[in-house]
Length: 83
Image (cartoon, rainbow, N blue to C red; front, side, top):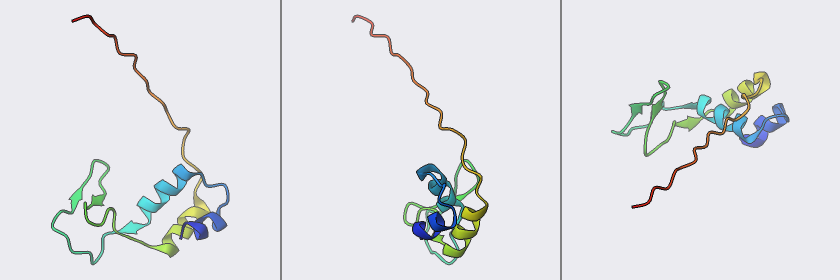
């Protein structure tokens, strides 16, 4: 399915594909007791992740995808204090 998305939009990065897979996955008809709504409002399960991947929706989203913003990297230098 990812190959179909890349065929529809060859400019997709691996981060773009991650975003598209989440958006094109649906929890419909999957039975699990652990479905929960995560911090961004999407249903997620430890058994099924975000649900079934809809190939048609994935391709449609890929065609219109403008890309993700550049990835941010945050780092922190830890101070080592003597004990």
